[in-house]
Amino acid sequence: MQKPSLPHPNPILGNRGFIKLLGFRFQISLAYQIIAVVVGWHIYQLTHDPFDLGLVGLAEVIPYFGFALFAGYVVDHHSRRMFGVLASMVLGCNALVLLAVALGMTAGDELTWIYAAVAAGGMARAFIGPSYNALIALALPREHYARAAGIGSSVFQSALVLGPALGGVLVAWFGIAAGYLVAAILSLMAAASLFMLRIAEPPAAASAPIFASIAEGLRFVFGNQIILGAQALDMFAVLFGGAVAMLPAFIHDVFHYGPEGLGILRAAPAIGAIVTGIMLARHPLSRHAGRYLLAAVAGFGACIILFALTSHFWVAAFLLMLSGICDGVSVVMRSTIMQLMTPDTMRGRVSAINGIFIGSSNELGAFESGLAARLMGLVPSVVFGGAMSLLIVAVTARLAPGLRKLNLQQLH
Image (tube, rainbow, N blue to C red; front, side):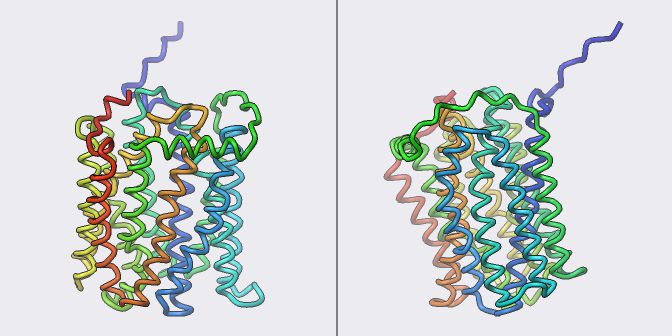
């Protein structure tokens, strides 16, 4: 007689659908990070101009903005899984185009091809976040959302550690083309992982008029002080305080390291965020969550200022790791708030709007950093950005008292 299987001691990690989704998120995030590092190194080798690094962010964010709201609509009204599969395949094809550029197989200006591939990647990325967030809500019961946010953040940040490090090592040891090839393989593996996922999706929603449905999602977000405050806080802090896009310039001009150093600095914030994610998965914040969120973003801004002022490579890496610890609190808190406060029928649209606030802030921040570096100089521009992050925390604390006073147990 067969013995009944014992329940898994951790019901979240024992959930096969959730584990498969984590695998998909890790693979696609790893591919994206490798592409980001290799493209930055590739372009700076071609031009040696920080402004051109900033244009990478602008090339991605414009199509991201253009497709994000429509992505949220189709995820809410059609298959959550298949749009994630197609987006992953597009990202893999873009990596193959970049590989062709690196091998000299394309005609015309290399920069044009690179920016075009990055733009197509921005379009694909608009679908990945809404698909993942909608599927997570189907895979887990509501009471597990807060711990799952910590676990998901740790997995995502692990990709942020390994991706830049792997990208730097591939460029240093095997060349730029090898980095693009590995990213293409990982993207196609992610598409296959999501394609084989077995989660019961609800029947397709009634096909509401597309613009009316998008407007419904926008009204929900902009009418909710807590969700809007959390998203705006993170958006503007990253928009002004993000120094990642300028790291190739810091490596060349301040620290005088090679591509391995770029990988280390790109990975350092994620190492800190992994620690935060693990801790918050074990001990979720509940009381005074809003105050912790505001303090974490203020700490992020202070770390960015100190990073810009040091000329020591390992001190800079440590400060970036501390910034990642602070950012990790923000990521987990924002994800938990969004999952707990969003109706099931609107997860795609709300996730897409969140992506516009949060995901686009990295790319717009890259453009802002490049423009500020040209106008002010490299170091002063990053100090200015960190100071702006501190100002944004003060403004948010005053304008969003609901967020400042938030306790998460109110949302369960």
